[in-house]
Structures are given as structure tokens and as C-alpha cells.
Amino acid sequence: MSLVIAFIGKNGAVMAGDMREITFEGEKENREKLEKDLYSGAIVSDAELEKKAEELGVKITVRDDKNKLEERDGVLVGEVSSVEGGVVRKRRLYVSAGNYAIAEIEGSEIRVTAQGKGSNFIAFGNDTTKAIANKCFKDNWKKGNLQLAVKIIMLAMETAARKTASVSKKYMLLQTASNVDVSGVVEKDLSEP
Image (cartoon, rainbow, N blue to C red; front, top):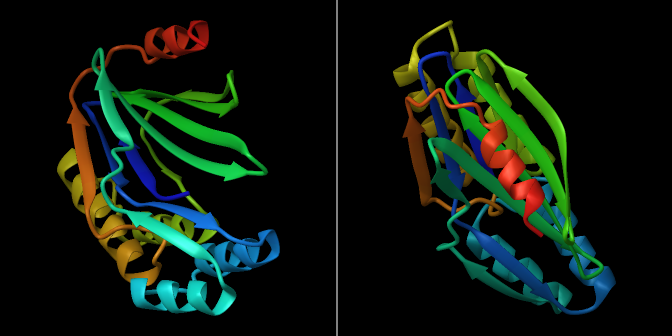
């Protein structure tokens, strides 16, 4: 799991996503210990991650080129995923100016878990990355505009990358002024396996 952040404003929306993907191979108990340390924020740097993986006998593959964002029909779509026991779980966020939807996907099953209108920040990730993002929102948001939201999101992405090895230093940022209803894109995803 990594970090996807969005701001939904009445005049536009912005979304950022890191580009890290980490796969773990080895004994289940050791993999789970490494993941727990990583996602709790106990492992800050890539060097610490490599050292801890080696200590536990877990082979890791780290990629920093996974695109987690796209724009479809004026709607920004971001996704985070995790694999547990061979089952892929995904959380998908759909945003445009003034509205958003959240869907959860397990295997080929997709269901909408939240929808809303209005102005809002939303962060997907592990508990540590969400806490970092939410602190950036709380400390810096003063009923600003879309440009301030972009700066706060960039600050949150950069802060998370400095504080945990679960997030890449590189990230992607998308923006839209479209106020198209996200439900059209959501419905299209619901109807496709």
C-alpha cells in the first residue's frame, strides 16, 4: 500500500499518488513482521528497509515507476492496492470538482463504499502515511483555494517520502477543473469485471 491524496474543491480537484510498489517474498511470519515495521513508520529509509529485509530473510523488490493515477472523462481516478493471502484488495478514489466516490475492489467484485459532494481532502494509504497527510491538511489548510490545496498535497507527499520507506520520493500530480459527476465513471467500472 502506498499514498494517494486528493482535494475536492468546488472549482476543481487535484490528486497526487506516489509511484512505489514493493513486493515481498519469504516466510509468511517474516514478511508480515517486515510489512508491519514498514507500514507503522518504523522504517524510514530505503537503506533501513533493505537491511531489515536482509535480517529477516525476506526478498523485496522495490519499483518506483507504478502509475496509480489517471484521468477518465474529466474524472481523476487514483488507486492503492495490497495483497493478503493471494487476494488482491484495492481502494479506488474518483474525484472531480465538487464530488467524489470511493470504491473497494476484492478480486473481481467492486462496491461503492462512500460518495460525497463539497470540499474535502481525502488520503488513501497505510495508517502512518494517512496520519502524515492529515497532519499536513490540518496544519496548513485555512479555507484557501485550489493552488493552496496543490501546495499542501505536494508538502504531504514530500513529508511522507521523508518519514517512511513505504512511499517513493517521486509522485504524480493530476488536476481538473471538470465538474462532471463521477458516478458515470464509477458505473462504467461497476459494469466491467
